[in-house]
Image (tube, rainbow, N blue to C red; front, top):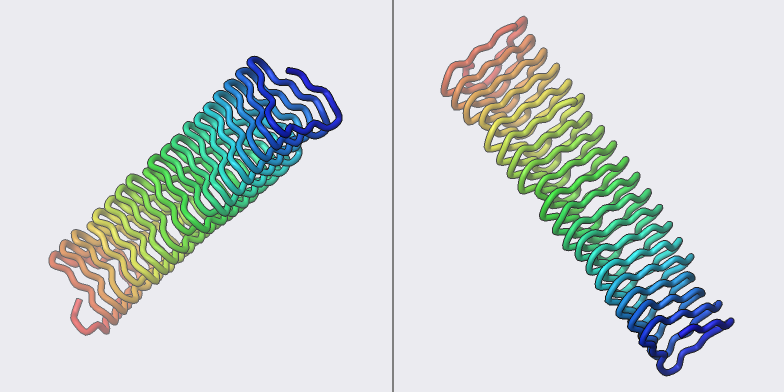
Length: 372
């Protein structure tokens, strides 16, 4: 069936055993368009009931869908505006090239979903069975972007509720504001200038950013690798593997926890007002440290200045190398305390089950309640 007109209106049924080809400026469908083979529509489309094909659907023009669009194969949409308040489902692939996409209901590709546009607004559900790829300038996601496989997003500005995948998640952006969840059963990779995080969960996690603000939770079931100029943690950063934090300015007001090792490096300023704790070793290389609570197996600290306000507890040994150590809390180890300190001022407790060794010292002032 081939239709060529200025405007086309389908009130009842348009049925074809083979292909349907419609060329017009505008198609208004109030009935059913059904074909066994390809459906090709050139012109703007408003669908208020059903478009169905056992093969592929091609639309070249703006799409406004308030009802059902379903194919047994692929859907390809090329137009300036795509608005979906109904259901768009492809048993295989969906490819949308559109400046503006507004989805308030369901957009489902059972295989792969490929979106290339300027602005994506989603308050419904966007789903793929295998892979979702989004390349655009801005994403405003108030709903869910989910995949049983992978999600790959490259966007300038992202404000999002939930991004969920059983496979890997890769996000590359300048601004990422996550108000909901970013979740993967596998690996998550985030590259952004600025990240504001609510809840992030992955197997392995890699973050590269200038600024990371964690309000609630960052958790991995394996390893975590964060590279940042500035990290502010108000919630929990947790790993069952190792925590590798290459952070220039680290301010921890919550908990940084790990079953494996914690390694903090490339650091100029560390203010730990919360808790840093590992079941294994903690290694910190920093220019300046102010500490509230630090607990680990073996603790190895190299710094210019260390101020301990509350506790540093090693379940094995403490190795501290610093020019200046001010201890007004508890510095304790069940093994040995090895302190290479130029200037040591103690008004708290330095305690050890094993040996205490203080070396490379020029000035020692001990006003603690208990002798060193």
